[in-house]
Length: 60
Image 1: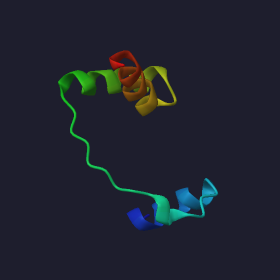
Image 2: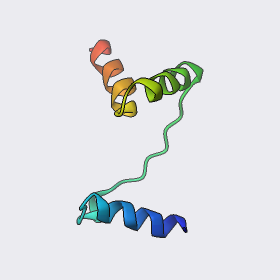
Image 3: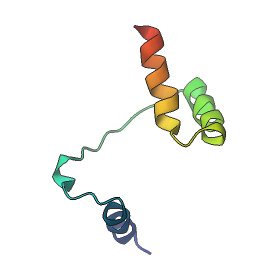
C-alpha cells in the first residue's frame, strides 16, 4: 500500500474531515529523548504525550 493511500485510509478510519488543519513539523530529538520515547512505547499507548507533555509540565 502506498504512503498516500495508507494515510488517506487512516484519516478516514479516524473520521477526520478537516485535513487542512494539519501541520507538518520537523522535530529534532537527542539521545535522552530517544530513549524516553523507546521506553514509553513499551509502556503507553500515548507515547508522544507521555514523553513531551510530562517534560513541559515539569519545566513550568
